[in-house]
Amino acid sequence: MSNQLSLRQPSSWLVLGCITLLQAISGTRFSIFPTCSTTQQQYCHFSRVQLNNLMVASETGKLFGFLSGAAVDYLPPSMILVIGLIFGLVGYGGQYLSIAHKIPDLSYWQVIFLNALAGNSTCWISTYCSTLAIRNFRDWQGTLIEITSSYSGLSEKIYSILVGGIQGRKSSQNSVTYLLFTSLAPIVVGLTVAIKNYGLKCLEHRDIDMSPIAFLIAISTGIYVVIESVAPSFTHLSLQLQAVILVLVLMIPFAVASFIALHQFTTQKCNSQVMPEPCTDIFESKSKRVIKEFEIAIDKERCADESKAAEVDRGTEQVLMVGNENGLKELLIDVDFWLFYMVNACGAAVGKVYLINLEQIFVSRSSSVASSLFAMSCVFSFFGRNFSVMFKWYTRKKSIISNPALTVLLILPMPVAFFLLINDSSRCLYISTGILGACSGALNAISASTMHEAFGCNNFVVKKTIIQTNIPLGLLVFGCLAALNYQKEGEGNHGICLGLQCYSRTFIIWGSISLAGAILSVILLLRKQNLCSHKS
Image (cartoon, rainbow, N blue to C red; front, side, top):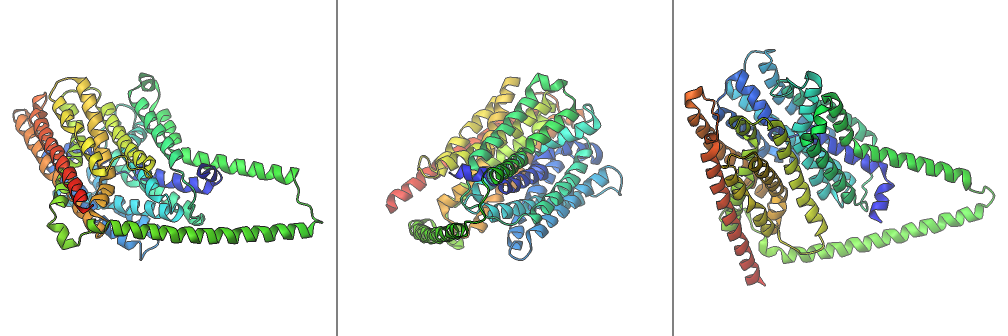
C-alpha cells in the first residue's frame, strides 16, 4: 500500500531528488582530499604532516555542526543552506584563488582556517537536507536522510568525471580545477534546489515509505559507478559521455517524478473524457460529498486514536530505557561510554585515515590503477553505509542483532585487511581497500544509532559531539604516524618514497590499532549484555 501511495506522489520524488543531488555534489572534504592534497603539495610545498593537519582542521570544523542544528529554530531553511554555501565558497574558493595565483599566497594557518570553514559548510548543507526530509517525510525521514547522506561519498567520482570532461583525460587528475568545482558546483545546485523547493508546499507524506525504491536506486547507482570504474569498455568512451551518463544516473528520482506526473495527467485526462460527471444529478453529488466528509472525519478520529496509542507505546519504551539514561556528569565517568569512544577511534577513524592516504599509498607502490581503486574505495564506503541502513530498516520490527554486536562484526575484518596490505599484491590491495571502505562506511552509519541504543537519548547532542571528536583526534595521531614514517623512509629521495617499505610499518600499526578496537568492541558487548541481564 505504501509503495502504491509513493507512486502517486511526484512531489515526494522531487524533494528526494533535490536532497540526493545536493548531498552528492556538496560532498565532504574526505571525498576529494586525496586529489586536492597532491595539488596543495605541488603548489604550496606542504609536507605530509602539514597535509594531514589540514584534514584534521576540516574534520574539526565539523565538530561545530551543532551550530547549524541550533540555528534551525531561528532561521528559515533557505538561510541555513545559504550559510553553508557561503562557507564552502570561501573555504574552497580561497584555496583555489591562492593556488591559481589570483590572490597573494596564503599562509599555512590561513589555509588551516579555510579548511575548517569548508568542513563546517557540509554541516549546514546537511542540516538543510535533513530539514527538507523531516518536513516532507516525517515518519520515514531518518531512513531517507541516511540513504541520501551516503551519496556524499560519490563526490570524488562526480568531480573527477566533470573535470576530466572539461580538461581531457591526461590533465583530469591532481588539478586545481577540483577546488574550483568544489566551490562553485554546490552554489549552482544549492540555489537551484532552494528555488525548486520554495515553490513546493510542505506536503508531509506521512504514510509514504519510499525506502525500498530509494534503496534500489542507491544500489543501482553504486553498481554503475563500480562498473564504470573497472569495466574495460568504459575506457573507450569519451569523458564527456561518461559525465552525461553519470548525471543522468543521479537524475533518476527526477525522472521518476516526471513519469508519475505524466501518468497522472494522462489518467486524469482519460477519466474526464470517458467518465464525465453528470450535471443534472445534484442530489447524488451532494450525497457523495457528505459521505466523503464523513469518511474523512472517521479517518481523523482513527489517526487520533493511533497517535494516542503511539504515545503510550513511546512512554512504555521510555520507562524501559530509564536504566540507560545518564546525566552529563555520570556520562563523563562512564567506563562503557569511553569504551565506545575508543572503539570508534580504533575502527572508523583508522579506516578513514587509510582512505585519505590512499592515493599516496598507490603512488608509493607505483600503481597504475590508482583512480579505479580510489573510486572503488568510495563506492564500497557508499555500499557499506547503504547496506547497514537497509539492514536496520528491514529488521526494524525484529530483534535479530544489537548494534553493539553488529559493531563487533564490522570491525573484525579490518585488522585482517590491514595485515593483507603488507603483501605486495594488487589483488590484496583491491580486497583490503574494499573491506576497509565498506566496514568504515558501515561503522560511521550505525555510530549514532549504536550510541542511542547503548546509552539512551538523554544529552544526545553532547554525546554525539564527544564521539565525533575521535575522527579529528584519530586523524591527528594515526595520520601523523603514517606521515612521519613515510617521510623517514623517503628521506634520501627528497621526501618521496617508492616501494612497499613506505607503508609496511604503518600497516602493522594500523592493523594493531584496529585489532585493539575489535577487542574493545567485544568487551563493550559483554559488559552491556551483563548489565542488561542484571537489570532484568
